[in-house]
Length: 212
Image (cartoon, rainbow, N blue to C red; front, side, top):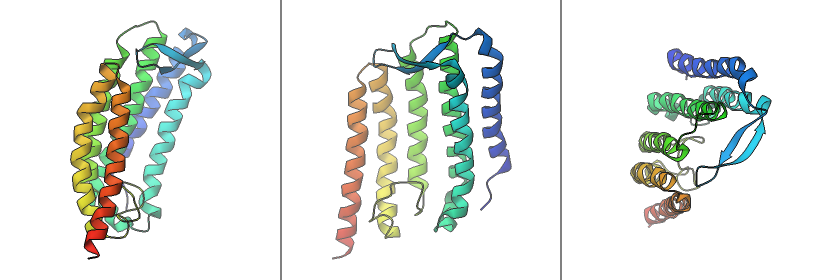
C-alpha cells in the first residue's frame, strides 16, 4: 500500500517549516528552552536550545517514516488499505500536533506568555476526537488500534471493541482536554487509564462470549 503523496508532502512540509523556523530563531533563543509544563501551566523542565529546537521536528520526521513503513511490514497490511484515508489523515494530524506543540515552545521561549493549559487543551481535543474516528474505522492490524490478544484473534471482537472504543475516545476528547484546562490533569489521566483497562476487559468478554 502506497500512501497519498500529497499528504506525505504536507507532513514533511510541516516538519521542514519547523526546522527552518528553529534555525532562523536559534540566535534569539535563550540557552534553555521549556521541555515541560506542570499542571498549573508553569515551566518545570528545561533543555538546551540546541536539543529543544531540533529534537521534536526530528521525532516528527521519524514518525512520518514509520507511518510509511507500517503498511509494508504489517502481516495484515491489506486491512490497513480498508481505512487508508483515515490512516493518512492520522499521520498528518499527529505531525501537525507535534509541530503545534513545537510552535508553542518557540513562542514561550521568545517571551510570549499565554495560558499554556488552554492552548494544549484545544490541540488535545482535536487529537482525541480524530483518534476516536480512526479507532472506529480501523480494521484488524498489528499497529493501529486497540491491540489485545482477543481483538487480534478475531475480526468480530476487533470490530465490536473498536466500535465502542471510537465512541469512548470521542468522550475523552472532552474529558481529557477539560482536565488540562482546569488544572486537574489527574482526572484526565485516570479517565484515559480507565478507558484503556475497560476496553481490554471488554475485548476479553466479547471473545469469551463468542466461544460459548
